[in-house]
Length: 304
Image 1 (cartoon, one colour):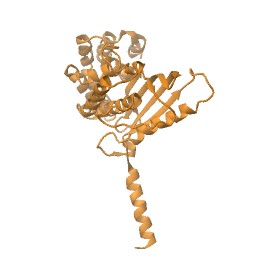
Image 2: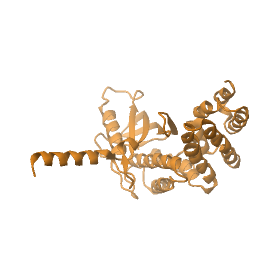
Image 3: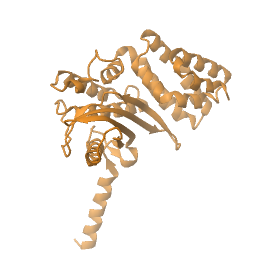
């Protein structure tokens, strides 16, 4: 074999291997402005470690092309650090492209007020499925599977179920693990109805099956259809939105419905500003019934 042929083969191998990648493309930002002190290197190290943990691990058995990776972001606000104990808040967002357009639609816009963990600079972040290691890696793994689950639900009916089940397993493992009291927050049923436990409990509850089916219809049969036929896509979204009201009436202030509107409120306004009078009236009434605190946002539906 000539050197030229060998070089060509090696190049082809590199191209093929590089064409496929892990599932997530996550940008991690850490804000440590509230923490006094001039040595900020630990936060840079932490940011790099978290980003590598999320983006370099394989979370599924699926093959993703580089262009198919799920775009997401994680903003961690450090409130305090004492004896390697970090008290933080975290804002998570994920999005996916809409078929045959340059538009990306938000899937998750979620704030975790109890993103607390123990970390010492240069600690290795390692995750072993079905085994608790640290609270930080457990939370990160939970959110990785949550992101993938939401993405899969948007492309196929109930397609995210296996990944939500893994989230559920992580919650169970953390509930029985020995950890600092501060780190327990978010995993327990009793400490809040707006936490990691509550969200995955909603998603896996049969009572919210119709919501998850609507989540698929909203994206795959609504948004993805709008490039070919705006009216049909919009009508599909309007026709199913009553599912949100039904779920909310059955269980008021349910977290999974709140998180949907946290991600979708502005998008819904943009969609239905151009809707028919009947669509505007129906959608506005439903949104106000579910989420009256955002009236100023929803009023824009009728201001066009």
